[in-house]
Amino acid sequence: MEMNKKRILLITVTVFLSVMLVSIILFQELVILLNVLIMGVIVIVLPFSIYQFIEFKRIKNCEDEFPNFLRDLAEAKRSGLSLIQAIRSCSKSDYGALTQEIVRLNNKLTWNIQLKDVLKEFGEKFKKSSIISHTILIISQMEESGGKTEDIMDSLADNIESIKEVQMEKRTLMNQHVMSMYAIFFIFFGISVALIKFLIPLMEVQEEMSGIGIGSLGTLGGSPCQVCIGVNSGECITCNIFFTTCSIFNFGSNSSPKCYYKSLYFFMIIIQGIFSGLVAGQISSDSIIAGVKHSLIMAVSGFVLFLSVSSIGII
Image 1: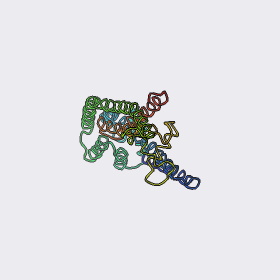
Image 2 (image 1 turned 30 degrees about the vertical axis):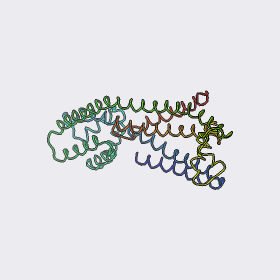
Image 3 (image 1 turned 60 degrees about the vertical axis):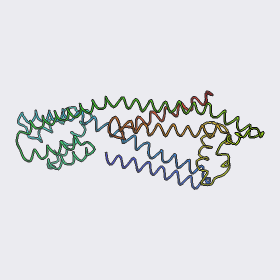
Image 4 (image 1 turned 180 degrees about the vertical axis):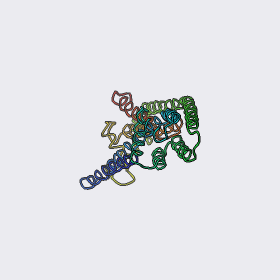
């Protein structure tokens, strides 16, 4: 799995650098290069984050099946088998996501690799799981010291299940807070839409009043990015990103307040969704990686809903 992670990271970085090199050769405009840079970061981060989440779920599934494996090992030991023979017997059973790892464990033992080394490698493979890695360490030390190892295995299985039950109860309680994060995100989305709905017409009216010299409030109208139209300098990077966003999603002309404020709240909603999701994962599962799915749900929902309300003319 470590090799797969490195391979995914290598592929995404290679694609990113290749696209950046082509962009530098073909395009000289700062805006285009900046957009390519942003997309490149997404290309690197998104696949890696999804892989990390899939790996996180795989480890959790292995933890769920690990007590059953321990009990089967204990029963095999009670029947008079050695630990190596017990592992060989258990490798024929189905333990869900854990089955493949147990088969690999047995295969290494058939190659006459020492049991201690095989168990050490197995524990290192699950170093992200304190439950499995610590249990394997105990089994390895227990096998060296001898004694009624089958009773200890049953005790370890019971303890693991108790830990998993406590974690499940905690997750159930924390789900209320996860729902609160979703509620906060969609409330933020609603407030953003409402502000755009009422703010943009006010700005447009003020801009018209400023144009004909009526009222002192006219100076508040217009887009803050007007001075950056056609300018590719570093201080106008944010405004140029907004201009590109307006062009892609038809948020309005670059000089209009509609373009600026729609783009501003569009990015704010997506950023809010990403980080709210990560916080939700930390709350529910004590892992930021577990929040990737919440981040994707919130960010994609915000993206689709914002473009929908914009296209049908609500904002």
